[in-house]
Length: 279
Image 1 (spheres, one colour):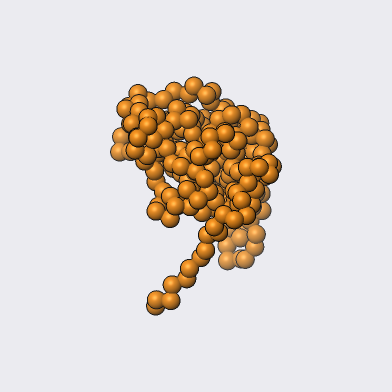
Image 2 (cartoon, rainbow, N blue to C red; image 1 turned 90 degrees about the horizontal axis):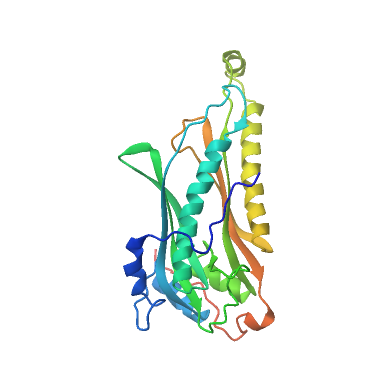
């Protein structure tokens, strides 16, 4: 079941961001870049042939609805799954729109998070942030196959190593599933009291929910025309629905191979790891 609905290149961009973006390195000559890069990451980015253009943000405040499930049945809560997809996609597409506005080739260090406010526990803000970057050669060869800026949650160090290996990010991909884990009956709980044994109903529910999330993440990578996914992570979150309604979220960075002429030269300095001897 396809849940994610990619936004168009002209996705809505908050007017409040226009003045900030207008004075960054991506919009005017001599503009000041902003980034969430550390000093080491900034230096590595330069050695890889990229420059930072600006810190880009996408946000969506979403009301999370309610869906009733059968008390003793494992089942996906598809209304809530759709909600979590839509909210994240709005945030991601707005972040990418800011990067496109700056003429970026990609976004590194993407961070996707959720937060609550005091005015409602059933209201969540989804925020996507990262640093828009551009290759110094200006060929556009590192952009995603659809011509837009790539997105990646890789650190600058991992981004550098990926380029050195002859690959480039395509998209930050995700798969999610909000699932109702069935309750146990009273008699079943009493029979298990004091015994070490597997709880098949719980195992099956969690297994199915995690598989749905991973399968959907893989489908996004295929749709993005990538060759694989690195840095896969699977998180489990309860949010605002109660203890038996749980979200399984799989994320990673889809990548593709670069043609030989766009790979980092063999003479490029390699990052080294230094282990301090201080106690």
